[in-house]
Length: 252
Picture (spheres, rainbow, N blue to C red):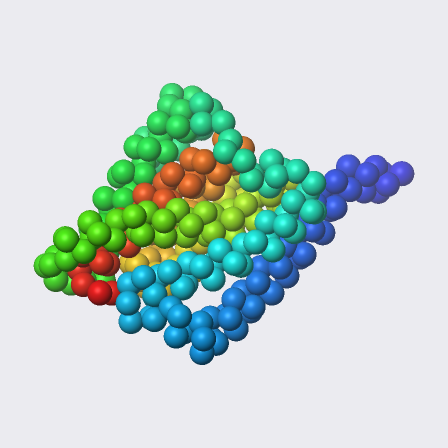
């Protein structure tokens, strides 16, 4: 009887957990497909990796293609977009305590915190990118940055959305009923950090920085019930990364 009672209590969690392999399989299948697509000669001729627009545009378009089936599977499995955080969320929700950042419980809304932290994180990303990617090469492409700014904004919007779906929505949605808050945001942080080993900044610095950022963004999503706060933070960081790379003549 006791075992039956435990099984009944655990049934919703087990059902939720059983959906996660389907989500993972979708991510893997989408990754294999987009990898194959990106390797085709016509794709590479269309998106020249030697140019800024071709290199980043092609890669980001592949990411966007990859999240289309993932979004469909998440909604199909969980019936409601809100169940997998595919909603803006409530930005008026006050942030929980984060001691090491000096954030007190219920003192600041995620709407304000997302903007403030986005600016500070973007500044840190700018400085680290200069150190680890460019090695103090002076900017000589300000005019091109201005002309490319609409493209950069578009790239940042799509890239931050696509990565958010894969590394946060696809983790929080299926696992929120299985893992407690601290553990689930840590899982998302690890995934996000490892995925950015070859990012900008790259290497261990990039992994640690992205992991901490992923942890923070996942907390915002968990607490607000949506992706808006996380998207704001991630978007501004991507704007800075793409702009810095262009300014420092890495992809011109």
